[in-house]
Length: 280
Image 1 (cartoon, rainbow, N blue to C red):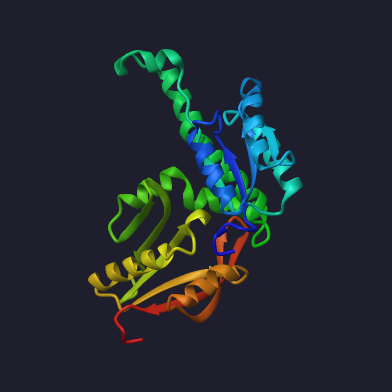
Image 2 (cartoon, rainbow, N blue to C red; image 1 turned 180 degrees about the horizontal axis):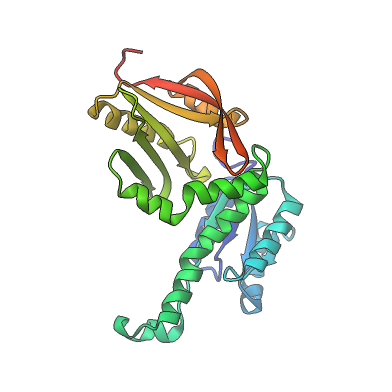
């Protein structure tokens, strides 16, 4: 098992076109590390290429069509994923596109439609895929309706932009191997000496490598610089994996709270606290 750190993990791979694709190199590495993979292909033109490649992992390897610019195809693809597995641990989004004429001309001649198409397929498609992942695999902890509500409430692009422009709140981006591997955000609560760790996420491919602990310690350093003695957080009582990770990194359960977050939803959380000055 030591040489297969992804044994038992389930991965979904978007973006394999041929053997030179970055997505294909990553898929091979994931498979070698023990992951079971599901693949998409973008249109019939690419089907034969991708089909031939994924046979390397066995004829039973799942391969389904999905045009990432069409929400109905994304939904259909993940419907097939749900029929084959009850979870997804890894998601590879290696998709980019721009019209040929936009690539050949000079930048100032780029049309609005070409720019929109490039961003829709190359960037927005990641949001669409992530949304499907949440919808498919987080209902074990909270309801689907609450997932939709919280995605809009906490991760809408406008919300993040506003938070980035505010004093007293920090967003950290974790980079590993030249790619974004996670993020954290934390803010001053207004209670003297207290900072709250509001969000912490490490991509499954980069978990168990110490990155979460490093982000926690960095947040602790910011808290100390701001004169805070403790870092607090709230975690869903059913999120056992996160609770265990926070305990490992020096947090303790200090209480519990049921919080009304609007929309008819509540969060049933443990409150956890970690001293950042050595006094607690």
